Image (tube, rainbow, N blue to C red):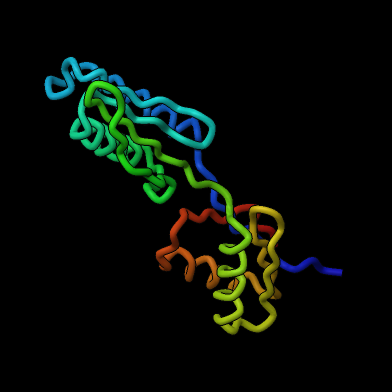
Length: 165
């Protein structure tokens, strides 16, 4: 019996690249004149970053710097879910930025519906935890599904893994 081609749609963050971007942003902020004496700092927590600086304006600038470093490291900005900048003690500002990873049940259902609406004969998909497994009779059909999602603007970055013939 031949197995049918499959692949998984996932949404993952390369946390090492995020760390590298944060390190670079912190290093640059510590040397840049416009950040002098602002105590600008980005800290990494569990699935979130905390940006802080002596003024709300510098927190905004720090966020822009972070985005620039993430883009250089090919990390999609869709992983960032910035909260509001909060006033902290002494007029300083702080901002929590959640890191979005994994497909929620809701997103999985949305992906399943999109695949179904493509009307590709013999292609099916199922939610398996934080990923969607796509199965098809023909490799070409699966590649069409991947091409469709590459062009679609999704709220989270998508990766396609474990392609098996």
